[in-house]
Amino acid sequence: MNQFRFTSLIPLVAMAVLAGITWWLLQATAPPPHEGEIKPKEHTPDYFADNFSVSELDQSGATQYRLTATHLVHYEDDELSDLVKPAIRAFQPGKPIVTATGDTGTVNGDASIVDLYQNARILRAAGDGDPAMQADSYHFRVLVNDDVIETEKPVKLQRGLSVMTASGMNYNNVTRVMQLFGNVRGAIAASDASGGSLKQPG
Image (cartoon, rainbow, N blue to C red; front, side, top):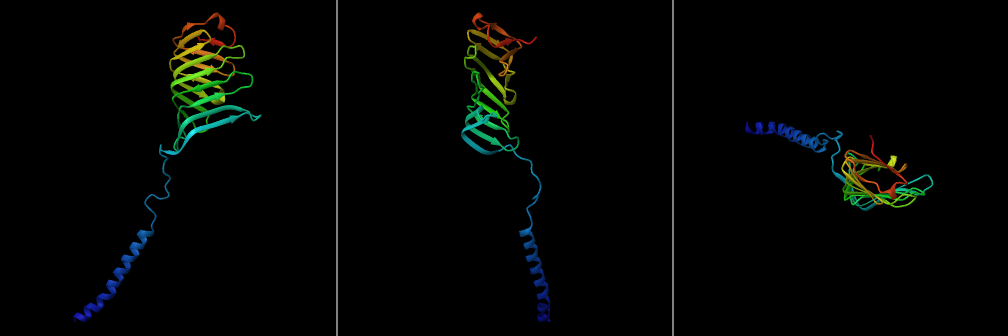
């Protein structure tokens, strides 16, 4: 009787073992949960660069803009890059070189917008009938495609012997027109009255 019971249990045990092995194989080969789902990109760095430099050329192959930084960190979600000690220079034939710098900055994915922060400065060399110009602010935004530099922060402008302050600024490097906004104070020296334009919208 006992021998009969033991013999009859063998197929059941074998089936249970086979079922267990099958379940284990299914678990081992099954894709991880949520595999195949499109996950949103996270704001995490995906590459770095030291002593970064990129140039934009005009149709003749001459350098039109050059962006440099001592360190760059690129983020995958918004394609923005953080910059350390950024500098962007604009080169135009027959016109003074314009350089914009900051302690830190950002640049968008196609390098069409560069934001400069902390001790941000614009320097335009003297030439073409204009004295040297320097503008200082906490923030400057360089709109590369429009050749425009602007800020919504207080700015101090020195052009030759003229010194002015304002609540904001827009500088067009093509027309060389500087617009000052808000509370504008200062004086324009007589020697700086020619060449270029300074004006307050109103």
